[in-house]
Length: 315
Image 1: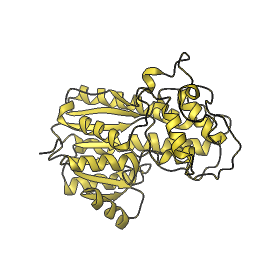
Image 2: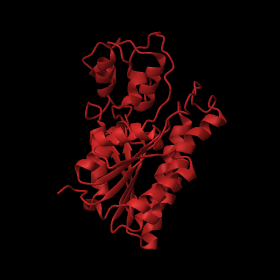
Image 3: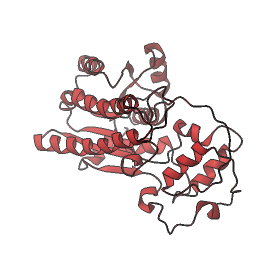
């Protein structure tokens, strides 16, 4: 019997990346999993079938009406909800080509990011709470980010939205405890997880693996994490094994936040066995610098790069 046997789970933004991995692991552990996303119904149902999920629902997390429809569907077919994973999120407004620092970002782009990452979180918790209250041991799992715990100069909206997610998690956990609801609420805080959000930074050329390897030298565990490792953390928080855990952040970052890239650390290009003159774009170097809290540690060379369309970073 799986660790989530008999539980009903809803995972948002679960058609790719971390969300997909969580849904798949939940299914392996015996949960009845409903995934959501923005792709057409037929395509989403095919995706659900490939990972063993029971159903797929079209959901724009920024729309209250969509959440009401999801609630009605779950109430009709399942009568309760045991696990809610608020995974859907974006790092940049869809279609935006504008830098996301405080001097460059538009109010429109700011609102677009917060609409998905914060409004979507609020609407999801509010809409699903009545169904979660029908469970004997419910769990809400929010996907945060290291960017919500440190300053990220290049992306103020994303960092702000994830900082807010941390407080929503704690506040909701205390609310449910005060009310006597059998609902726990925790947050997974990933960093340096190798998903498709890194494609723009590491590129797809012959230097990709070298960039990943060199970047990994800055991580205490000397490697990047996987979506599957995040999923296993989610299984623990969703299961009855974590019945005394609520209002807590769970870092899964290879030790990055523990080390905080202290100024006494050995520079990456002195520690790495790789050639330090690996070709990177200015954008790639900037992201790596922000991640390490240090100046760029790899030599920057001029290189053209097409703007990549922003996508879901969590699912």
